[in-house]
Length: 100
Image 1 (spheres, rainbow, N blue to C red):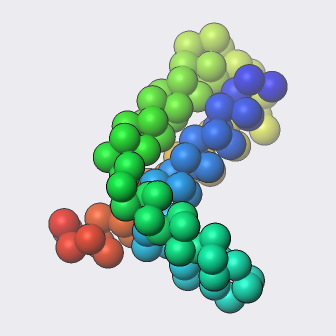
Image 2 (spheres, rainbow, N blue to C red):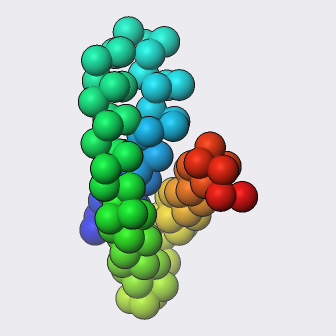
């Protein structure tokens, strides 16, 4: 259970980290304009800290799954899906900022 919770926390922190660019695209069509603006301001201020937190949570997830020899296939699939989502959010954020 810890493995899935850490994977979900990783995806959540990556979403908050990329909130300056990705958040408005998702939240504004849902009618959450105020929340999208708040998330964009928060994410821009603390983006580097949130990137570090995301990487640390991802490392903890990998430790829970592979360091403790977790054999549950659903947990391994959840970990790799969250890793792909995090890498996608990192790539999108870096492209939007013009670093790549």
